[in-house]
Image (cartoon, rainbow, N blue to C red; front, side, top):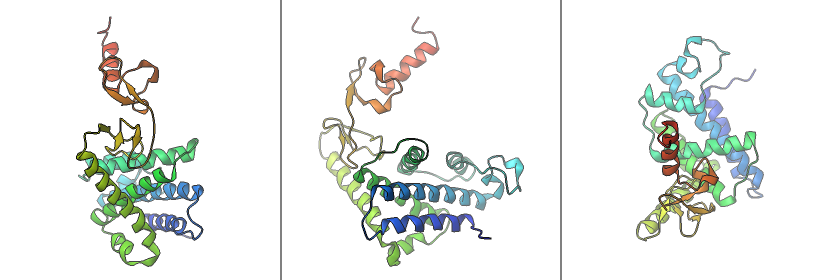
Length: 249
């Protein structure tokens, strides 16, 4: 019988991702899909290990079933909430953005059609790798960050992390010095979506920019629930609130 601890399981998924990243024939579209799945799995298992360190019962969805070995474990989203509320673990905005993006892409892969460009995939991978190595070091006490630097087999990871960090720093500075209007990109979650060019200058995601019929502000169709209403997220929320409270009648 083969048994993996949470950390061994996470490490196995990380090393599986590294295998695809180091493919001598270059990364194919299927490789990006598998790497995203692997890294999402790594992040989820690290969350559970941190919860286990606080108390093993917190790994279970229903803590009252502890110490059952067959009860369902907590989801990644709920694990994050428990870490914040019970473990006093702080997640920066960029951390939560990385986790949200990797979770959404994982769900697309597992449950629906999946599409992502090579440039978008590189940013998503770099984004979540930044978080994984920080969390593994600061919260779980692993030496993965050192291994990423010193182990030749992990050298491909440096390329993705450095690509993301360097590109984000450069683009953020460039946009800061310009008068280009931007907003958060729905793919990489950074304030790098150029509203004039209708493209994220970091990951390359493109979509149409619309104008709100009420306040005339620009918004992306992916930001709203009802695309045909012509309302930006703020006006959409205010319209929904007014309807719910009978203020429109």
